[in-house]
Image 1 (cartoon, helix red, strand yellow):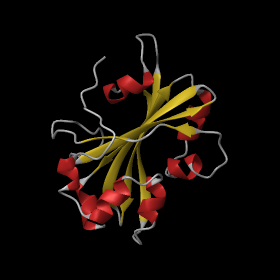
Image 2 (cartoon, one colour; image 1 turned 180 degrees about the horizontal axis):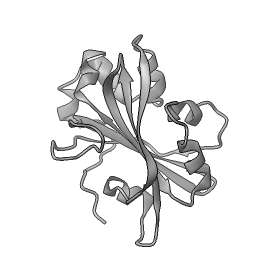
Image 3 (cartoon, helix red, strand yellow; image 1 turned 60 degrees about the vertical axis):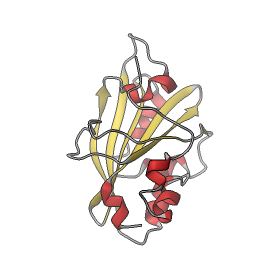
Length: 173
């Protein structure tokens, strides 16, 4: 399964030249939840979907899918002052009980649990891309100008997390 996006270890130059320094810093923050809360705007999470799903090829070179795997994912919009600024997808194998339980957190930000220090997690380095306007974000009528992803490991189970930065972000940072 080929990944339709080209991921790289740094923000693409085209993105760096089109956003403010504050936006670029936010896009590289370890905890996006904490960074968005620090903007002094009302932060909220809008749950779009939580269910078994087909595999998302944007994760194919990090989750190593095979034809027999079933997948579980959570899609959310992270909002500032009710304006969507990030579309995020978390995905794991459907039999990854720890991750599936953690993803079932309603409108609470996943980042609260990932970064509160209570879980023995390891995280891969960030990878960034600039998705084309044809890249669809389910549950959101629009496109992203940049994205990042990383992979978390917990007791030999892996969670993929991709965060797509929406144009509305630039009016807040």
